[in-house]
Image 1: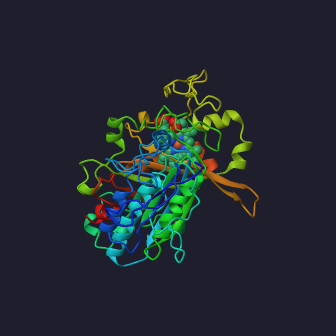
Image 2: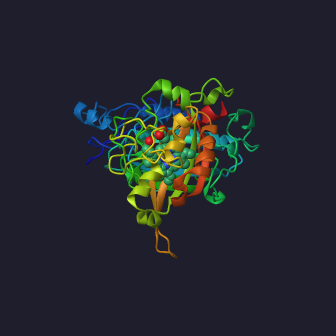
Image 3: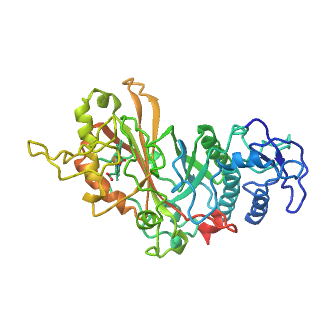
Length: 438
Ligand SMILES: C=CC1=C(C)c2cc3[nH]c(cc4nc(cc5[nH]c(cc1n2)c(C)c5CCC(=O)O)C(CCC(=O)O)=C4C)c(C)c3C=C
Ligand SMILES: [Fe+2]
């Protein structure tokens, strides 16, 4: 992307008037901000959907097609960023609401919606771009970058449904603090939060830009609580994607749910009619866990032990009972000495649906690093585990087993985490504010 064009959204119905002529990330003019009402924001949002260049003429088809190939639909039955093929980069933030004024929160969520929608289309945050007396509407670091398949997914923590905003009656039934789980000693200060936003993109700057601008638009209404950057996906969400490797060097995501399979997603991931709160049906519960890997320790372990920890071969990703990555593990196979080939305490045996009454989750995690520990000089990094499921009990069941028996526990430490409900996707006439408050 080398240049930009402009669109005007000065007032609904006004004709585009600014100049410019490029093809890429487009600057969008017009008022949209925290103080703006949802109706006005919606009007501004509707103007974001036309694809004209600065002169009001249709942008060249070839350029649009090239750009469109990196645009993930923001609206739809489900929020983007869950079943969407996992992008390479993540910026994830949790916020606490600081206002006690419900209308301010609702208005901010409206503003966020239209800003998020614009950014996923590769456009700047709508606002008064040319006003020299005001801060620019968009922080600018994504200018010239492609949309990068950006998805922005919102979620709400249990704390949002307390008495502050009159939302108690709209709390999804299963959204409550998770019980204490084995091997978990989570730091409360960098866990949970009222609202979370997951921004995924193929370009780290595009993902960061999204969170930064939402944070800016939320000034006076929300304050950031914690944030994580993910520099490499650790899961495939469909076999059409190559399986990535985690920081332990193992292929990760081989037996993840294929998010293209609507029946499996309906069975394990999307909240269905079992939930009395209609407004979250079609959404999903999101569990996050920052899991530090004791990398130096792991790197000193011999290959045989590493493979036994996971129950898979490091080079190919195949189960220890097979030769190819996608071979089905044989959990009853025994070696000459009568031991199970896939060890009883191996990660995949303990987590496999065959050994958990068919239980499955959609994993969508990322590798992270926090640099060097100043005291020990060790590399600090691991897995920022993200998983979507129709009930938090799916995670609880798995972690109860893994926390007690997993050979991997010797090399990992759960540092922080959260539980959020991610509502369904938005229809054309709604924003996150009207969806939450009903
Ligand atoms: C509570 C759920 C899980 C946590 C926490 C978790 C942590 C974790 N996992 C890996 C690496 C791998 N996990 C793999 C498979 C796998 N993991 C879980 C769940 C949790 N993992 C499930 C449900 C599965 C699928 C099991 C199956 O169906 O066979 C694998 C194998 C490859 C694959 O199928 O993805 C790896 C590798 C790490 C490093 C980690 C914590 C740091
Ligand atoms: Fe795992």
